[in-house]
Length: 503
Image (cartoon, rainbow, N blue to C red; front, side):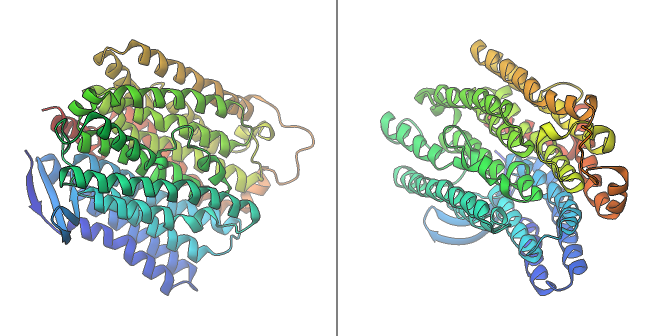
C-alpha cells in the first residue's frame, strides 16, 4: 500500500490556471500581457505537476482534502501514478498550445480572443482536476465543468455551423452527464464509497450480477467523452472550432478525460477481478474493436483534413478502451501510456493542419498537392505524427501498440491481436494519401496566389514561427518517447500504476 502524504501541491498546481483566468480578464485590453500570463501560468503549472513525480515514484500518494459533504462523499484531490500521468500530459501540452494560439489567433485576426484564452484556462483547470480527483464525486463535478468550459471554445466562430455543432456537443455530453450522475449515486448507494481504489471498491457481494452490469452500462453511457461508437457524432462536428481548440478536444483534455475516466472506472471502481467475473472485458473489447475499425473506415472517406483526424481520434481512443478490456498487465499498461503518446502525436497532426490552413487557406486533402515542398517543416512533422499513429518505429505509437499486442497474447485473445493489427493497417491507408499528396504530387496550375508560396509565408513569418515551433517540439517528443519512454516519468508512472493494480 502507498503511504499518504497530505500536501497542498495539487491545489497549487490548480491555482495557476485559475489565477490565469483572472489575469486574462484583468488584462483583456492588453493582448501581450494577457498571453504572456497564459504561457507563464502554463509553465508554472507544469513545473509543480512534474515536481510531484519523484514523490509518487517513491510509493507515496499525495492527498489534499477540501470539503466533507457527507460520510463517504468528499471533495478532495489525490495524486497517484495514473492521475499524474494524465496531468503531466495536459499541463505540458497547454504550454505548447498556448504558444501556438498566439500565432494562430493573431494571424487570422480572430475575434473574442480574451474569451478564448479565458475558457481555455478553465478547461485546463477542469482537466487537471479530473486527473487529481480522489473520488467519483470530485471527478463528476469537474467532468461536467469541462463540458461547460469548452462550450464557447467549440462555438467560437458564432456562426450557424458553430452553434449547430455546440448544440450537438451539449446534447451528447450533458445527457451523458446524467447517466454518470446516476452511476455515481448508485455506486454510493450500493457500497457506501466513492473513492478510486486500486482493485476497486465493488465486489461480487455488493449487488447481483445484473445490477452491477447495469451500473457499468450507466458508467459507459456517462463516458461519451470517450467518443465510442455509436455515440461519436459530436466529435467530428466539433471540428468547426479553431484548430487549437480541436487540439484541446483531441489531445489535451476532453476526449482524454473520457478515456481516463473509463480506465478509472474499470480498474479503480469495479476492479479487474470483478470485471473479469462480470464479462465486462469482453463487452468493452467488442465495442472498442468495432470503434477502432469503423472509425478508420470513416477516416478513409474524409477529404477534410481535420475531420479525417477527428475520425482517427475516435479510432485511436478505442485503443485505450481496448487495452483496459484485455484486463491483463501489458494491456492496461499499453492503455495508460497511449494516453500521453497519442496526445503528443495527435496534437502534432492538428497543429500541422492548422498551420497549413493559416498559411494557405487549404482545408481539403485534395487541395494540398505539393504543400510538403512549400511547408517542409510542417509536413515533415505531420509525417512523423502519422507514422507514429500507425504504430511504426521509431515513434511513440510503436511502444504503446507493442504493449497492447503483448496484452492480447497475455490475455490469450488472438482474435483481438488480429483486430489491432488490422486497425494499424487501416491507419496506414488513411494517413499515407495525405503524405503522398503533400510530398509527391505537383500543385495544380490554378493555385491561388498566396496559397502557401514562399512570399506569402514570409509575410507571416513572425506569427508563423509561433505555430511551427510547438508542432516541431511535439513531433520531436513523438520520436524521443520511442527511445526514452521514461521521459517525463511516463513509463515509470505507468509501471507503478500497474504494480498497484496487479500486486
